[in-house]
Amino acid sequence: MGCPLTPSSVFSVDLDGDGVKDLTTANSLSDDVSVLLGNGDGTFQSPVQYAVGEYPSSVFPIDLDGDGVNDLTTANSLSGDVSILLGNGDGTFQDQVQYPAGRYPTSVFSTDFNNDGNNDLVTSNRHYHSDEVSVLLGNGDGTFQSPVLYAAGNDPVSVLAIDLDCDGNNDLVSANYSSDDVSVILGNGDGTFQGAVNYATEEPPSSVFSADFNGDGYSDLGTTDYDVMILLGNGDGTFQSDSSYSTGGDQSTSLYSSDFDSDGICDLVTCNYASDDLSVLLGNGDGTFQSPVLYPVGEFPSSVISVDFNGDGANDLVSANSASNDVSILLGNGDGTFQSQISYGVLTRPYSVFSQDFNNDGDLDLVTASLNFNRVSVMLGNGDGSFQNAVHYVVGNYPTSVISADFDGDGDHDIVTANRHGNSVSILLGNGDGTFQSRMDYTVQTGPCAAIPIDLDGDGYIDLATSNYFSHDVSVLLGNGDGTFQDPLNYAVSLIPISLYSADFDNDGDCDLVTANHLSDNLSILLNLTGPYSTINEDSPNEPFMLHQNTPNPFRSQTVIGYTLREASYVTIDIYDLIGRRIASLVSSQQPAGYHQIQWNSDRTASGVYFYVARIGEHASTRRMILLQ
Image (cartoon, rainbow, N blue to C red):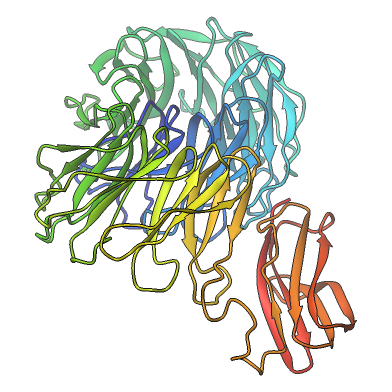
């Protein structure tokens, strides 16, 4: 059980609606987030990874589309954006949608800045030419407007939002590492903010947190580097000079506050990156703190939070450990002390994980793909949440994705990996007892980073599709039903397709494909043309036309709608919003038989889901499209 490379941020909230706290980490070197569902007793299930942008430094869970389910957002430093992963309510998440944020965003926070009931986003952008925070107002459906930038101090590394001046509007505060200060940016309540006021700290702050440390009802600020620095609030958005407290550890990178000893007073915990431990400082209730007590955790802890994992009423601790590739859980005793750590991790650079019953005993097993070792590791489950020692199988070079399906129709689950540096997929046929045969490799295009098994040609056999990172295309390998595959068919998409998914997008009964394209900031939809309803044919004489899916979809400003007429007809095409209002009329004219297309320019239209309806006489056809402004 564990996380992939370099977990840099950790957060806990109920992600699957069972009332139990779960965990999510942002993994900076593997460009994904891990979700570990909680069992309610302080233990956790094996992680599931979801791809995000490049070098995610921070993760924040919150309901972004108003469906009552927690979603995820990450700040992706190297790709300069945030990733939105909408939650399904069962602990799983949809593929990411990315929104530009600014240069090198390192921290993300979400709350309602303009009092419209929708959660918005703010990032701190740590770039030597930026020194700013970005605010992205939410539309309430999980989409966001373009970022608005506000100046902060030099090198902002952390940001949060809270009402600091007691006016009912959320304000911003950033920790600015290179200017040795924090910036307070008061909100106007309409999503805009005033100019920053900076407050000096004794050391370069690497993290900022807000709580009422002295019990006066006003929000105070805490920052940390080697020491903890406390700035008591005056209640009007201004702050007193900082007081510092030693952590006893080396290079504190993250600060969190909660009540650890059940006395109603806010206490502190820091994670100490260079000394591999946590410092707990119990509060006295007047804004001062007792001497630290240190607790060992994994290597290079970079983030810490507190929550009650085992339901005993005592707050526990969890740290994300970036060098040991794990998380540490320290259960609280309720008196301000903590038990020894329990670690959840894998030590062989795991990049992808999948679960299936490989030995047909009714218990779920695990398989992970390890990048540098060119191996998959199979861990058979005992049925009680524990697993047997891993058995390793050789696959192709640099496996970035692993998944399971029955490729040879024998009722046993097989394994496939996408091997990015080997330009291949590896097939390991299962024996039904948890062991596997030697691999068979099939060449695809350059840099396959994801593979999905699905029946694409409707013959009842499982086929394969891969998204190819360097050749910017998708490879489809049709299955023969005996575990072997035909030569690949390749389909061009946009630049650097990092993620691949399949579903029936045009409701014709066929499985279509979609890729998330990292460099071109869009999605590519490949509609399946093998099924009986995909084209107009002589077997459907009552259908006078075919309305095609718009492309691109989703889109940002312009999209093209295509349609094919069997005979000359009077055609109307209108666009409607979610509540049925017609917002545009694109076509209303007599047109000849054949293929036609029309472009819709949506520059003045808000982001969201829209429908376009084509009508010919008594016949009508409707399709859905998504606008991302």
